[in-house]
Image (cartoon, rainbow, N blue to C red; front, side, top):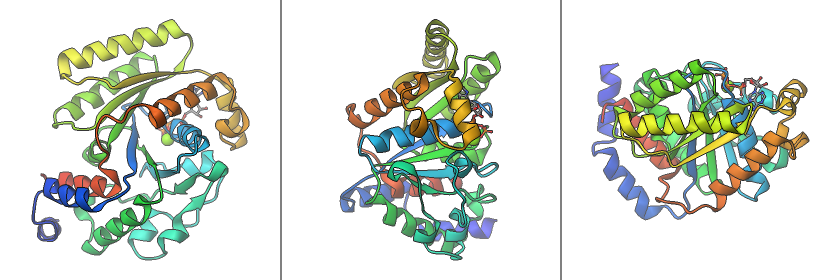
Length: 297
Ligand SMILES: Nc1ncnc2c1ncn2[C@@H]1O[C@H](COP(=O)(O)OP(=O)(O)OP(=O)(O)O)[C@@H](O)[C@H]1O
Ligand SMILES: [Mg+2]
């Protein structure tokens, strides 16, 4: 493991900030990398990733969904697709990048997840090269790269979350989901967080309940964690979403005008047309940052 870390250090001798600056100068187009995370499992991350991705794609944005839930990759299941290859195969050179990318509905692209690649300190040099190659290849192609990240707050998950340009923390109004979201945010706040933070309160039964949760959460994290929330969104509880999961056909495809569908469209509009506050670091920036975090920068 130490050997691996020192190999990485040799490969990237300067700080990841320096690497990023070099990238700044050379990159023409930057994808916006968004990580979808939660403290508690089962709150709706995968469905939010897929439906938000589709809503953005319907606004003519090119979207790649990266299934980064190493424990339980199931973006393909929600989309009703069958994955032959995944990120792990690309990194191990068992297939090309093109082989692993799946074409989904409305022109969305999916890179299926790999299990067992969650500790990037152990990543081989060849795999790092592959990861950067992959990043360069997708950077020009996509406006948004949306990552479905596993629930929880262990180091691998946290490094993935905080390397993104934008973080979306998903919770529901349930007290356990609220507490676990707060715990995740507390861990994130221990690092100098430089990503924009968004909250998504999902499965909201009524607007007032959702607004109360949002307000409490925003206040608590501002006061105790000194983090400002960029944008908070409510997604209603919607039986159309459950039905779509059972049909393995995403909600934005079959019930785009449902309550939750409209909420996804609204959120997508804010993301697509709202003012971009800082320049995105893009996919290569994401990889450099993530590797930097894993080797302790
Ligand atoms: N807005 C909603 N309205 C109704 N049901 C919902 C809503 N969002 C999610 N669900 C239901 O919650 C279930 C869990 O959703 P999902 O799989 O997206 O959660 P997850 O956070 O990705 O879970 P995991 O942590 O296991 O990966 C889904 O089967 C779906 O039916
Ligand atoms: Mg999931």
